[in-house]
Image: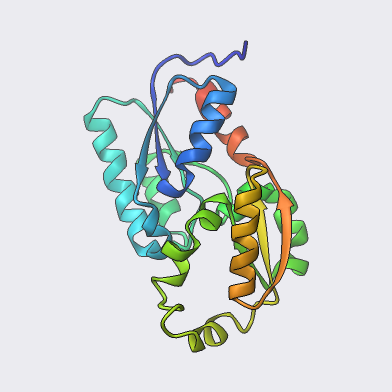
Length: 206
């Protein structure tokens, strides 16, 4: 049995795009003390909403009586604004610039960045929700000429897979074909997300 010494409930404020993955990590590691509150996944497309939304969620959690709070967001395009909120509120967040990095493992992602800097990344969530989060919001289905305009700097699509799901692999391949990009598959599992959540569960009250 895993020794997660802190038994007090911990509020985890998470991106909705991580809901399945956090549930899986919780179940695999028996992190029963984590109380997860997911914010809208669509903020993936509106990073300006993340920092103020997380700040409000932190304060709501404290009003609910949570003494320990953890933020399961990377920077996610906030340009450092999320770190300002976390510092002001004295809470920790998962390390990394975005979920692609912490799923791959932040150290490994950084080492491979010179080779991958012209890559468009998908996770399980984005492979599953490609039309909802990419095709339709940017009207690529109605205006295919926008594909070249938006993606001409990319050379390949890399699917960073959290699970070995043949259907999601097919979905990711279709996305690569739709964007006219080379396709590459990499299985990452849950990467640094596991370490971050286990460490949060072990943290002691200050």
